[in-house]
Image (cartoon, rainbow, N blue to C red; front, side):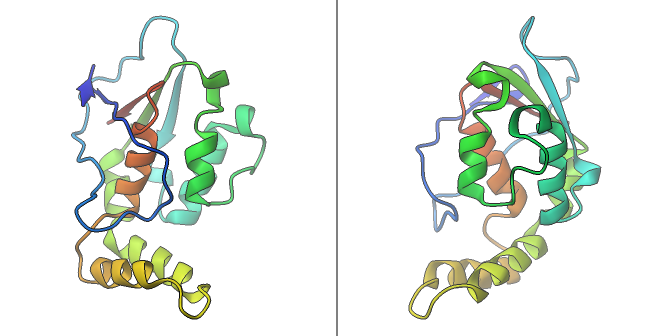
Length: 165
């Protein structure tokens, strides 16, 4: 559901990746650069700094260092889903993802395929079939992207108003 140019969506706790028809929410780019509700903190992620998965980790660590500690998050998406709540002591805040269109491109299907290939390479024999299927999808240019996953995770937290600009 879109609210105030931002995105809010209920998302039951789950482990990523998602599969099949359970696609991440589609988002429109917000037009407003205004902050959230009066007195609500605003944090800004620069989409130009999100050139790949590793640089996206660094950008989120930079933005939320005061809450998470320097370099705390190492890229586990389940952990990201948990610690995004820590920001602002679990009180409402606005997260502006500036240059979101650039991040959407660089965190697209190619980035997803690279990330999934890394995950699959670490799977024990007999595991990882779901990720292999998603890897084939990403290589074919379909299915969710890394950007989609980030948006889905963030939008699943009611206290966060996400604005893609």
